[in-house]
Image (cartoon, rainbow, N blue to C red; front, side, top):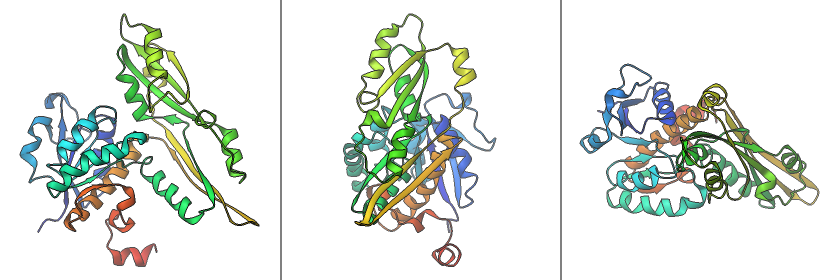
Length: 328
């Protein structure tokens, strides 16, 4: 009888390293290996026992991996990889381009359903944990408004989008919430806030040699789904400054629901995160949902799924009996 859930990691950047580390803290999970597009011998995993394989060998592991966690970027990697790998494996990913989630869901759902696989998409803290709390806010305070604030912190998805712009050698992006906007929301007044009034975005970019800074800046600030709707500043720095000042990956944010249960009573529901490492926390969420994905597949729940489709108990390594006794 199988004693643990066998996990594969597809892609080995900051998120992949976080997943490798998180698996060590979950004794019911076993890491089969890392799968990378790089030469495996050039990859240095966090733990010496971790095996590294080339991505091309993934198909040889279809009967050796219970859940494959996809750690590529949302802009280019996951739209290509997700539908293909969902036909071969149960998968979990952190696709976080909110505006494109419905189309990505559809693209993954068809191959997963046709092959009796379960594909858990858009898992992380937003989308993911924040999505669940937005849902709680709506159903518990139907007469109200929901506000989401991100940061201050480094966004992996937006940083990845910057690095894929022609002429960019390296770069990071920070999301900055407006304290004034958050204070208005917490007061219960339900302010009507535009996207630009809630956040600004700050980009720090290292240019490729010979790149046109003006073209790069314009490409970034007009990028749909990422920067076009925000006040975005682009600062050009050298590699030494990037290495010195921009290597940590903090993040966080708030979901606030402001509403009324009656004319006489205002209520405010708030969920917040303060993270020292965005990729490590996202990885911890992916690993918990990998457990749930395996269980859903065993129950015959095939096709694409999101955080809304998972009963909380399925995330835990504890039995239902333990959960009822210890934390209900």
